[in-house]
Amino acid sequence: MDEYYMNLAIEEAKKAAAIGEVPIGAVIVHNDQVIASAYNLRETSLNATTHAELLAIQEACAALNNWRLEETTLYVTLEPCPMCAGAILQSRIPRVVYGARDTKAGCVDSLYRLLNDDRFNHCCDVTEGILAEECGSILTQFFRNLREQKKNQKRGL
Image 1: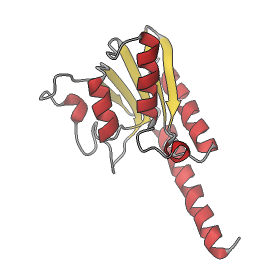
Image 2: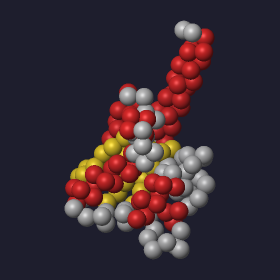
Image 3: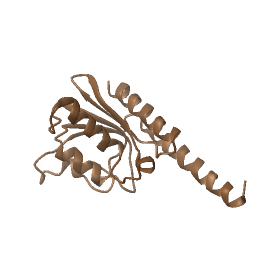
């Protein structure tokens, strides 16, 4: 089932890429049903907090009419950053599944292990690497295209 839901998160990431956003998608599942889905909107909203995870958490809270997202699983295409990891802990999501590691800002496994730090009052079960290659290639291609566009702009093309 993890691959199925990660594919849904990948579809969200593709929506982000289609509008020029960094292609990160998230889906939250409760009782085998998707209750929230989102993708990055920082460039569109001009708001640093509109990461896919945070938008999905807000939608899931509304769907369950509760800030505690117990018995849910968050699927996200890229390892969460410190802001998103904090929101995951605060919303009490018990399980997080992510695709690609983020060696520059990841706070689940790469730079820090915030979701498994027992000094917090909540910890998460984490599964990493689900469809990691697909998740990573969407990001790689997006940034490759962005660099090419910038290069062409400099040349006046």
